[in-house]
Amino acid sequence: MSLFGRLLGRRGPAPSAGDRPVALVYRGPASRPTGCAESVAALLASSRHGFDVHYTGPRERLPLTADTLARATLYAQPGGGTLSAAWRTMRPAAGPLRDWVGDGGRYLGFCLGGYLAGATPGFGLLPGDTDRWIDSPGATVGHDGDALVRLDWRGRDRTLFFQDGPHFLLDSGTVLARYPDGLVAAAVTPFGHGRVGVVGPHPEAGPDWFADAGLPPADARDLGHQLIDEVLT
Image (cartoon, rainbow, N blue to C red; front, top):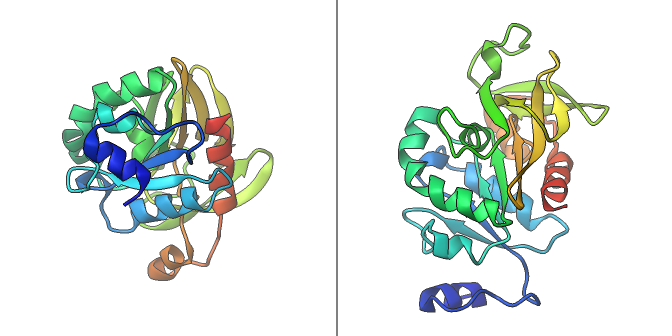
């Protein structure tokens, strides 16, 4: 068991500044299908920040509570199923997450996690809201299945794995990427003393995602690392 696990088990003080930064990844009913949470955890573990990565959720050793969040630097909400079903599961965590981010925490939302960062419904962490990109007039993907989408990511043309992700309607923040129709696909915004990073497609997708979906590989995990870097700035 890690030092972090022992501290949580005793409800002791937070790890000291000399310890590795702790990253929490939600895993549970709101992160189905299997693989979404694990891919986000792998992305965080492979970043340059040396995270000590742990899962949190209703069936994990670490429950998603204010006490757990207080010991973390970053919290990640992976992709999953529908927004309405996920919100029923995640609604009790909205208050603790808002308080934690407002006090300086860092939130990362991938696909469904991006939707949940919005307000209708969601955690209300964005200076604006989210909407379904495939329903926008200029969307180049018109179905909710596995697909590839081209983005302008900071002036570079990149292709990412996509499955019914959101676009972001923002009043402020730093736009990292736009869909082909110009709508925001990835951004980092302030919330209180903290920061929120959201992305509609899946930069965390590994080779198995593309193979399982019968799609040509388009590894964009370097963009996921850029998102992590930006939200920690």
